[in-house]
Length: 428
Image (tube, rainbow, N blue to C red; front, side):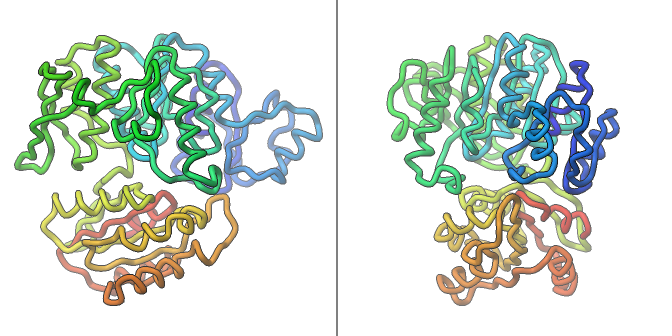
């Protein structure tokens, strides 16, 4: 929503908006001359020509109720994104359960270094943009496309990118088969090509414009090496033809696959391989993607957006690769439904940490459900592994106090989650 607000403001529209709490986002919008109200009241939208709402807004929201009662047009966020993107010659839409923000940022950084002047709408804060939006020209619109509520199906992309997918957002999809069907529909939206990770092949099958990345007959990775700084380099081949050697400036083996998706997209638009190589070597992570916040006494403080069991495993694995230290994990479950639907995977994904603190489940748009609570998750973890060091269902404030009292030394304090768990890390 904040990214769309900036895009519209820069196109000459008069923009205002409401949010439930103050944040870095709301402060950033104010600095750009956008009126921001804290709290939702009907008077905020008097005189508006259009009201845009996100999927997190409930039907009884006073601003939505007023708009509909007074016949003010309303549209959902994803549809507005479609209308904005229609102004651009080439639309690149990046989706997937994991890695879509990083991959979108990588593609954007490559296109920027190639002087293609892209306009970008990103789902995270990127230091090179000083925000989550890059205002560029009208030739390229690069957008992170979210699958929740099928919002990515509103777009009409030239190129689609699917980083991967697995069970997620089951509060909306209900079954994995319906989620697969949604990604299949998204892949067919591509006017030119859809690049999909080879892991998607078993679900999506063969399609006319669908190209699998990682297929030995197409673009794939060989000769992966980890350097002394614990970052990766690798060779890219197309079939048996060598393309180029690339090196990453970010941690995590999973970023090799994100980079490969970005490389394929850039090559599709005939960007010089030397520019791609330079861009990946200078690429720095999006905010909250394995980001060092600072230090607390002798401990390193890291924050990672990981909130799905697969992401949690990868984050812990990377932490163990990079640091030869004990790992104290502080995890905030994100939504009751996700925790409930994936509870079996959540009970086993924290292998390798020396202690786990659980913060109260971040409810987002949902009502309390005990089976999706941090307390229930703790019970299930201990049921699976009785000697595992886990405590919690703590508030942010209590978690902070507990960590300070624990007197950890020379550890990594790894904060995981997509909610407001970052506040604790910053307070430390």
